[in-house]
Image 1 (cartoon, one colour):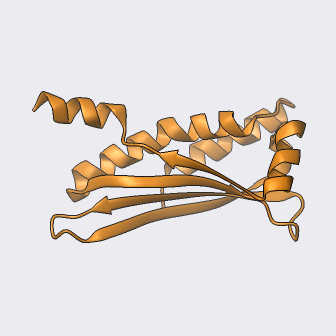
Image 2 (cartoon, rainbow, N blue to C red):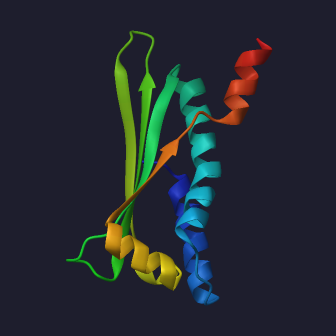
Length: 127
């Protein structure tokens, strides 16, 4: 659903090509900047209010060389209805550093809360 994932995936493939590994926290931070822009765009284009969300990383023992990233965002529309916008992408586990591969395999799910974008809060305070 979110076009920004294409650029993000390209970055991960670049890291793999350069034989660089990424941590789970670095992965979440990369996603954070892109997610803020997506939230702001959806708020403006669809007249939505952001309510919260989660960025989740899943590992499945049945797919030992892969993991999933999953972004869920919740919004309130002008009618008061709660809408969920979501996207999911599968990545190769080889892009993660060894310590974080072990952590993800152990915990199976790592969850990060998505907070309102700083730009959005600053804009609302200016009005």
